[in-house]
Image (cartoon, rainbow, N blue to C red; front, top):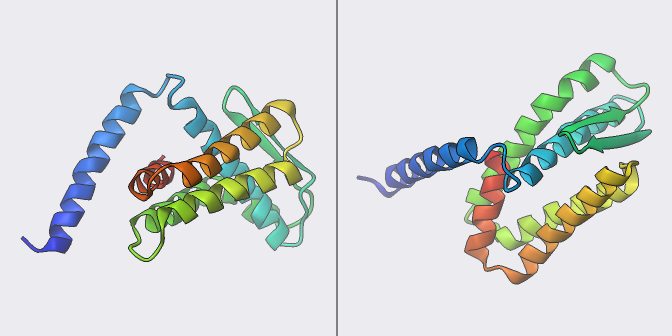
Length: 163
Protein backbone atom coordinates (compact mmCIF):
# COMPACT_ATOMS: atom_id res chain seq x y z
CA UNK A 1 0.00 0.00 0.00
CA UNK A 2 1.32 3.45 -0.90
CA UNK A 3 2.25 5.80 1.98
CA UNK A 4 -0.30 8.42 0.85
CA UNK A 5 -3.08 5.82 0.83
CA UNK A 6 -1.99 4.52 4.21
CA UNK A 7 -2.00 8.07 5.61
CA UNK A 8 -5.52 8.69 4.28
CA UNK A 9 -6.81 5.44 5.73
CA UNK A 10 -5.20 6.22 9.08
CA UNK A 11 -6.83 9.67 9.04
CA UNK A 12 -10.26 8.17 8.17
CA UNK A 13 -9.97 5.65 10.99
CA UNK A 14 -8.89 8.35 13.45
CA UNK A 15 -11.81 10.53 12.32
CA UNK A 16 -14.24 7.67 12.95
CA UNK A 17 -12.84 7.24 16.47
CA UNK A 18 -12.95 11.02 17.03
CA UNK A 19 -16.54 11.29 15.78
CA UNK A 20 -17.65 8.42 18.00
CA UNK A 21 -15.94 9.95 21.05
CA UNK A 22 -17.42 13.37 20.27
CA UNK A 23 -20.87 11.83 19.92
CA UNK A 24 -20.55 10.00 23.23
CA UNK A 25 -19.18 13.03 25.07
CA UNK A 26 -21.40 15.65 23.36
CA UNK A 27 -23.28 16.76 26.49
CA UNK A 28 -20.27 16.76 28.80
CA UNK A 29 -18.11 19.63 30.10
CA UNK A 30 -15.21 18.22 28.07
CA UNK A 31 -16.84 19.12 24.73
CA UNK A 32 -18.59 22.31 25.90
CA UNK A 33 -15.65 24.69 25.14
CA UNK A 34 -15.38 23.25 21.63
CA UNK A 35 -19.08 23.93 21.01
CA UNK A 36 -18.80 27.53 22.21
CA UNK A 37 -15.66 27.97 20.07
CA UNK A 38 -17.67 26.87 17.03
CA UNK A 39 -20.36 29.43 17.95
CA UNK A 40 -17.65 32.10 18.11
CA UNK A 41 -16.37 31.10 14.65
CA UNK A 42 -19.96 31.17 13.37
CA UNK A 43 -20.49 34.73 14.65
CA UNK A 44 -17.08 35.90 13.43
CA UNK A 45 -17.97 34.58 9.98
CA UNK A 46 -21.11 36.74 9.94
CA UNK A 47 -18.97 39.69 11.03
CA UNK A 48 -16.26 39.14 8.41
CA UNK A 49 -18.74 38.98 5.54
CA UNK A 50 -20.62 42.00 6.84
CA UNK A 51 -17.40 44.02 6.81
CA UNK A 52 -16.35 42.61 3.43
CA UNK A 53 -19.66 43.76 1.91
CA UNK A 54 -19.55 47.28 3.33
CA UNK A 55 -21.04 46.74 6.77
CA UNK A 56 -19.59 47.10 10.23
CA UNK A 57 -19.45 45.14 13.46
CA UNK A 58 -21.42 46.66 16.29
CA UNK A 59 -20.92 43.79 18.73
CA UNK A 60 -20.85 40.02 19.12
CA UNK A 61 -22.38 38.20 22.05
CA UNK A 62 -21.95 34.58 23.12
CA UNK A 63 -24.48 32.80 25.29
CA UNK A 64 -23.62 30.09 27.84
CA UNK A 65 -26.42 28.01 26.28
CA UNK A 66 -24.22 27.76 23.15
CA UNK A 67 -25.92 30.51 21.20
CA UNK A 68 -24.69 33.81 19.97
CA UNK A 69 -25.48 36.86 17.91
CA UNK A 70 -23.55 39.20 15.68
CA UNK A 71 -24.90 42.71 15.39
CA UNK A 72 -23.48 43.95 12.12
CA UNK A 73 -25.47 46.71 10.41
CA UNK A 74 -25.31 47.39 6.69
CA UNK A 75 -23.44 45.21 4.24
CA UNK A 76 -25.13 42.57 2.10
CA UNK A 77 -27.75 40.97 4.35
CA UNK A 78 -28.09 37.78 2.28
CA UNK A 79 -24.36 37.08 2.24
CA UNK A 80 -23.93 38.09 5.88
CA UNK A 81 -26.72 35.79 7.04
CA UNK A 82 -25.41 32.91 4.91
CA UNK A 83 -21.89 33.29 6.25
CA UNK A 84 -22.41 31.74 9.70
CA UNK A 85 -22.62 28.05 8.89
CA UNK A 86 -20.55 28.29 5.73
CA UNK A 87 -17.87 30.23 7.57
CA UNK A 88 -17.73 27.71 10.41
CA UNK A 89 -17.25 24.98 7.83
CA UNK A 90 -14.56 26.99 6.02
CA UNK A 91 -12.68 27.72 9.27
CA UNK A 92 -12.79 24.02 10.10
CA UNK A 93 -11.32 23.21 6.70
CA UNK A 94 -8.56 25.80 7.12
CA UNK A 95 -7.66 24.47 10.57
CA UNK A 96 -7.70 20.87 9.41
CA UNK A 97 -5.53 21.68 6.39
CA UNK A 98 -3.09 23.61 8.57
CA UNK A 99 -2.92 20.77 11.09
CA UNK A 100 -2.11 18.25 8.38
CA UNK A 101 0.45 20.46 6.62
CA UNK A 102 4.02 19.28 6.79
CA UNK A 103 5.24 22.85 6.16
CA UNK A 104 3.54 24.47 9.15
CA UNK A 105 4.56 23.99 12.76
CA UNK A 106 1.32 23.19 14.59
CA UNK A 107 2.51 25.23 17.57
CA UNK A 108 2.45 28.35 15.40
CA UNK A 109 -1.02 27.50 14.13
CA UNK A 110 -2.27 27.03 17.70
CA UNK A 111 -0.65 30.31 18.74
CA UNK A 112 -2.14 32.16 15.77
CA UNK A 113 -5.64 30.86 16.50
CA UNK A 114 -5.25 31.67 20.19
CA UNK A 115 -4.02 35.20 19.49
CA UNK A 116 -6.82 35.77 16.96
CA UNK A 117 -9.44 34.60 19.48
CA UNK A 118 -8.04 36.93 22.16
CA UNK A 119 -7.79 39.96 19.86
CA UNK A 120 -11.18 39.48 18.18
CA UNK A 121 -12.82 38.86 21.53
CA UNK A 122 -11.31 42.04 22.97
CA UNK A 123 -12.36 44.07 19.94
CA UNK A 124 -15.89 42.82 19.34
CA UNK A 125 -17.37 40.60 22.04
CA UNK A 126 -19.53 42.67 24.36
CA UNK A 127 -20.98 40.44 27.06
CA UNK A 128 -19.44 39.03 30.23
CA UNK A 129 -19.71 35.36 29.32
CA UNK A 130 -18.38 35.93 25.81
CA UNK A 131 -15.46 38.01 27.04
CA UNK A 132 -14.55 35.50 29.73
CA UNK A 133 -14.83 32.57 27.32
CA UNK A 134 -12.92 34.18 24.46
CA UNK A 135 -10.07 35.43 26.63
CA UNK A 136 -9.79 32.13 28.54
CA UNK A 137 -10.05 29.93 25.42
CA UNK A 138 -7.61 32.05 23.44
CA UNK A 139 -5.26 32.17 26.43
CA UNK A 140 -5.44 28.40 26.81
CA UNK A 141 -4.51 27.99 23.13
CA UNK A 142 -1.57 30.36 23.56
CA UNK A 143 -0.43 28.40 26.60
CA UNK A 144 -0.80 25.11 24.71
CA UNK A 145 1.28 26.48 21.83
CA UNK A 146 4.02 27.49 24.24
CA UNK A 147 4.06 24.48 26.57
CA UNK A 148 2.94 21.43 24.60
CA UNK A 149 5.01 19.56 22.00
CA UNK A 150 4.33 19.97 18.30
CA UNK A 151 2.55 16.63 17.84
CA UNK A 152 0.10 17.46 20.66
CA UNK A 153 -0.59 20.85 19.07
CA UNK A 154 -1.20 19.07 15.78
CA UNK A 155 -3.84 16.91 17.45
CA UNK A 156 -5.34 20.00 19.12
CA UNK A 157 -5.63 21.91 15.83
CA UNK A 158 -7.06 18.80 14.16
CA UNK A 159 -9.69 18.52 16.89
CA UNK A 160 -10.60 22.20 16.49
CA UNK A 161 -10.86 21.80 12.72
CA UNK A 162 -12.97 18.64 12.85
CA UNK A 163 -15.34 20.03 15.46
